[in-house]
Amino acid sequence: MRINKGYTLRTLGQEYILVAEGLETVNFNRMISMNASAAFLWKEVEDKDFDTETLVQLLLDNYDITREVAEKDVATLLQSWKEAGVVEE
Amino acid sequence: MEKELLPNEVMLGEVARLLEEGREVVMKPKGFSMLPFIRGDIDSVALRKPEQLKVGDIALARFNGKYILHRVIALEGDKVTLMGDGNLSGTEKGSRSEVFGIVTEIISPEDRHRKPGKGRWWRRLLPVRRYLLKAYRKWNKLVGKPY
Image (cartoon, rainbow over all chains, first blue to last red; front, side, top):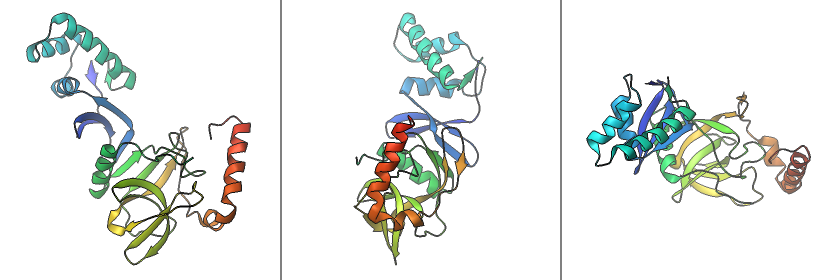
């Protein structure tokens, strides 16, 4: 998988949001809010190929959670990223 | 009928900052106060920092700590008066430095882009606006549109 180009991660107050951003135009209609761990994963894989296991491993290395929880979180996250069209296979 | 036109304050702070940087911002306003020209939660608007603010421009401003997207109905020196096209009365007043952007395009969900007019006729029709808005709503209800 790869993350589509044209999105920028921005911090809004306490929140993280992904915004569709061209050189000129910033489009807030296509905006996805993310929590801190999702934002962390985004930054890690922003410009490389990755798979589900990459993300699970990143969570396990950086957060004190079980593999089961990590896998579940990653599955949910990937689903929302795919629905929003920010990642492609 | 009066409903908050815009989404959360934090996002609008970011919009204002980007406009200040000279970038174009596209966002979807909320509410009924710019009917019949902007349908909240349906149409999007493209915004830019104004080079020179004019009467008739649809302006994004922050007056008294509150963000609004309404039409400029009067300019006097530094003073700016705004009023929602979908409102029957009530204006908002502030200064030019509190206006961050003006609408350059209104974008429908079908991705049709149109330049906003100056609303001259609409402003002149204020005395009968109540009936026009009512007719507009009724018609849309009849044809099954959300507004």
